[in-house]
Image (cartoon, rainbow over all chains, first blue to last red; front, side, top):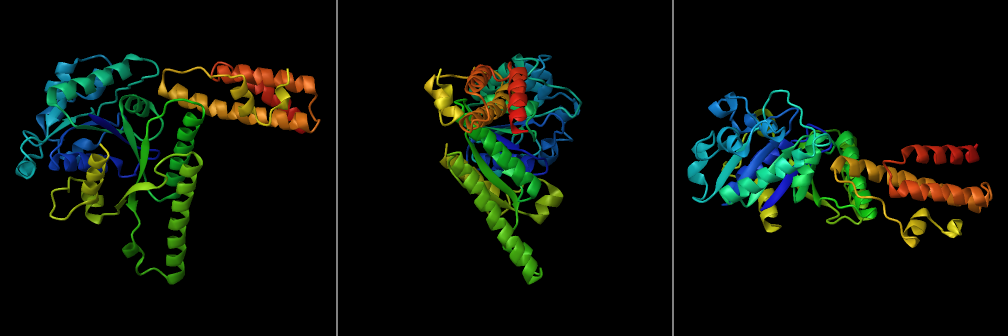
Length: 285
Length: 93
């Protein structure tokens, strides 16, 4: 089983919407998938999946209760997990997924519940036990972890449990500089002989040429140059730390409808960039 | 000891060879590599000051020795690193 952590240095990168859609796309492509919301401070996947009205969500239990040692795996399985296509809010798409495919969603509680793996080493071990339990019980191919942005508790829990990481960023200054800082950290880990999780970069809400139409020619030229320069800086930073691939792995263009609705759109007739990302992940599996 | 004969601090630690301790937790590890970068940069500065004669050979050797201790336990030896950095800073004044 591949456990892929979706992470971003800054918030607002479109990471959670991407995690939900990529998980759904993997299922559409016939995979057995689990998605875990590890955005403890600001969970939101329940809105993307439309799970906020389900009886399970309304109970208020989340993965935090388990990671804090307050409940066991059976409770997670019975009260915190939703089989989204079988008896959950994505049932209407059920006929569009292969018979064997499944998507299990492990919720995060919207309550304020601190989870601190630095203070309690059992947290990471519990997370690993949960992954092993899900893999064994549901014969999973992939687990997608939506980890909160920033280098905080959720990063540590997810990084300890994942086999690879997708780092999401927007083409904005704060996002790009933060992402470059993270690449430097990964380079330092390598340089000083520490183990680091392999990662790839995903540019979210990437500016498109169409977006530049209508701008004054000088401004348009400036922005095109800025995007190219940023891309070169990212490549140079990756190269200088000998990190492969030394390029942005995938680009998800800005999608107006998704920006407003933040929902699952991989069942629309067109092939979405989330589905192409899922195909790449299967290709790399 | 000949510590100052190395071109860079990283050459010195690999010639000994010296290994920084492993930390079990992710956040500790990230904090440690930040410190290791700081230690390495300070070591390079000491070597440069020794080569230019702005730092006495014996003092440079002692500082490099302290930095090697810091390198082995980067999170436990932050006070020692700060002390070395203060000494190096005084050489720059």
